[in-house]
Length: 487
RNA sequence: GUCCCCUUCGUCUAGAGGCCUAGGACUCCAGGUUUUCAUCCUGGCAACAGGGGUUCGACUCCCCUAGGGGACGCCA
Image (tube, rainbow, N blue to C red):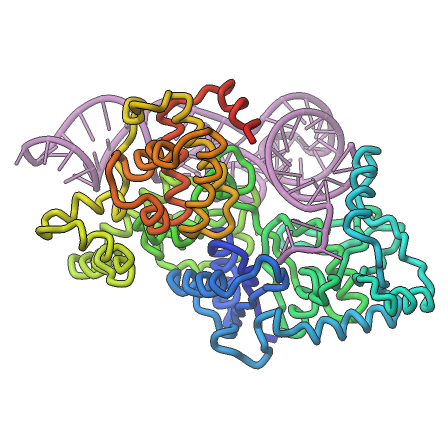
């Protein structure tokens, strides 16, 4: 049987470099053995999923040149490849589980569940559903349903024993059943949770090997149980290590740029990024470090995968990107540079801003330098302001950085709104509040409009610049603690 | 708190019981090439988490401890 792997991103934000990492390994594993690589969109979270995000993920994976054989855009024999279009399938399977006694209706409110968890945690017990609705009679269930009470479907879990499964890199793993929660399978809105959808789809789409992040090991028993209930064979499992921040925590946008678009925008070559990602947990048999994707594919083998969580090291990525750039011949170099810098599509949003401010084309470079390339390095005295104290400058930057970290949608209106709110809280005019931000983002007091600039630069670059500004000002731990308590 | 995973230079890693005086790469340092800088070349600093076993022999196998990470959502 032919090998089939998949990448199953959730379109809930920026295309994440972790998705690229998993896609690369899934792609390499399948393709190295003549198999297929499937792209499936896991958009079962109605509140957070967006078409825009899906489009960006597809574009990002295309940019990295990780082509999929089946997917929402190109179809295939196992479609649809978007989970929101498969809800009937999940409902039918959930019903089957109920009919066979493997699942049950639960009417507990989110509020009750939250209190329950808080109590369990306080008591030091394993946190999980307490089984209140476990033994509702059929009559009780239908009475509640006709009364219009919202409900979910939960899976039943054996209350003793342990769940065993095999990880191709770690061998046999066992997790006590007491640790497995009675997971919600179907939400009140009729959409499946990840756990139901992933099992049903992986089976129906003929996935033979699941390469995913280590963070999933603990929920594997839920999946194993479901595969068993349905009487389906479990795909082979490969849990890859997680990419880490320098402090070894899971890579996060709060501490590092994580959007694939960031890497494109600041001028990394896609082949350099995939090359670098291939080095995370994998090594060539001859220890070569600079190689094209085709050779990675050729050499790929699970027994060359290591398990320690690799720290994402921009220094080494920069070196590697330099190697790839210098490896280009002059023509290719010019083409690639042109695609990056003088890209019509990329520059389009800038045109209306620059045109009105230009008398000679020579004026342009100085206006956009901080948008096309890096902003100049900052020091403390760049932030001296005629009205604002140093403390106020720091606070304005901190508030903005914090709000930006939490921002779901990187849009001008949202940015303006968050600045207005924070300026008001500090009792400052918007103009004064924005002054340090201009410095942080552009490196100067007078620049193109701030929110246009931030929108153009994107979330990751903007966040990095705000963090760097705070670093330049040298915020003490004491001050940081005070700032973190601010409303 | 409960459970699970992981552990070789600061970082990415090689290492499948003797090839190990532990190798390579990034960073850093020193020298060389270069009108400057960068590239490039040469050299250097730097690690088997600790403790017990098993074995003639342990970086490699087992156990314990420690450290790190992850999971515990009607998120994925």
